[in-house]
Image (tube, rainbow, N blue to C red; front, side, top):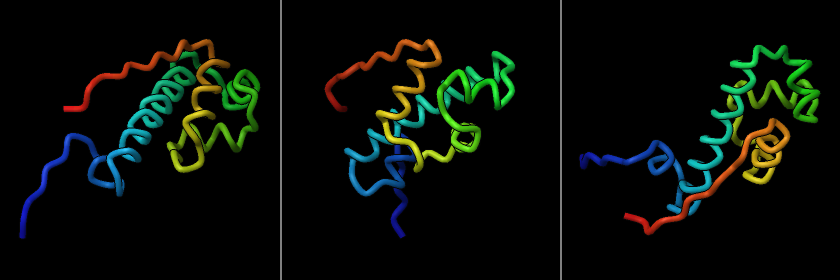
Length: 93
């Protein structure tokens, strides 16, 4: 049995490097949003209202259900939360 090592869990889980990159960005945005909601002490109802989503949708976000959120949706939520999203592009290693 050959042992493989990966830089990211997404590199191990996804079928292509392109999808792994997408998941890395989505997970980073999701984590930032989760931390923002928790750090501000918002109740779920308040956070949902501020982000313009339903409470069940917010619950999906807080529970890390990444498969339910596109990159576009997470960028939109970040903007609604008052976060500035920046993308850094560099040559792959």
